[in-house]
Image (cartoon, rainbow, N blue to C red; front, side, top):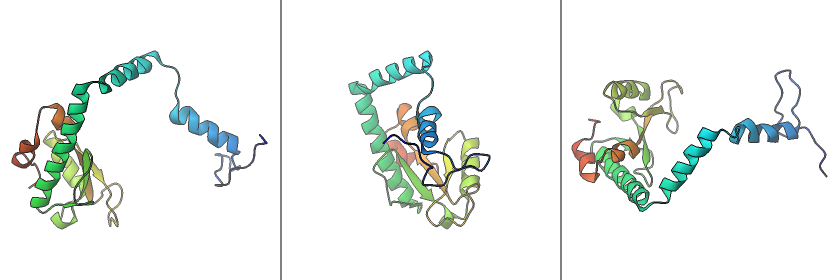
Amino acid sequence: MGADFPNPMGLKTPKGEVKMMSAILDGAVFPGTQGGPLEHVIAAKVVVFGEVLTDDYLQYVVQVAKNAKALAVALNEKGYQLISGGTDNHMMLIDLRNKNISGKEAENALVRADITLNKNMVPFDDKSPFVTSGIRVGTSSITSRGMKEKHMKKNCWLY
């Protein structure tokens, strides 16, 4: 018990030596999931955790989800193919292949219009990860700006 052993995944060091399991676990903790005890990060987490406990935050996240569902319906009505057909959370993945535009082209055009989103690969994508056939869209930012479900169809930016 407690004896170190070579990792079963065969992960190697830059020198080509098989890493020991203890090194894999240590790397997953630091810097993987734990950084240094930085005071500004701790303070930021305290503020966020306090905000999450408020009724205002609950109302916000509920509205984010409502906006996402309404946007998904508006996009479906315009012929966009959502990977899951809709959404149950704050974002959706849109397959653009039926619109003859790549994710990269869509991302670049919408960023120029100050709409932030990400190109994203879709299942069975025929394009590279640097081009993609899809985009990932969320509703957190527009909800923070006060938009509601009625704005999703009216201001749907994909035509």
